Image (cartoon, rainbow, N blue to C red; front, top):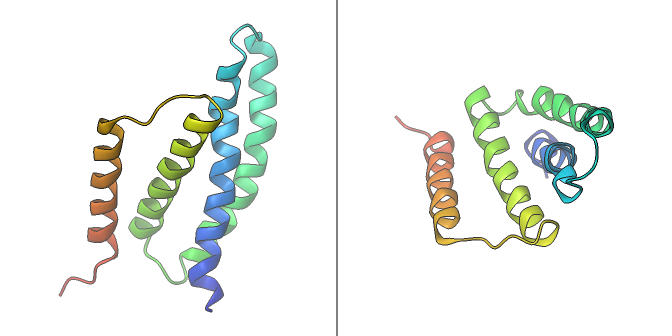
Length: 115
């Protein structure tokens, strides 16, 4: 296993879990005051950055910036789909599946070696 190829995926996966909770975790607490939610979200986001920055630094040694961004978007959508289903209790609908399929197609084009 080549660490520079795998590390960005694992780090971005963990990073996106923190990011998703930082951005959307508060939706489960609609009565919480914004002045409390913002610093808590910033604190959670700190750990997201601690993982995302090394993921991109390591990943850029073997992936292009466009490939890293595409990878991050696919991971973000995957993490969010699980989060919104299990944490927020929202259903995945057909249009979400289509959007994910189009993002997967984008990943194919970003990672395919065109000559």
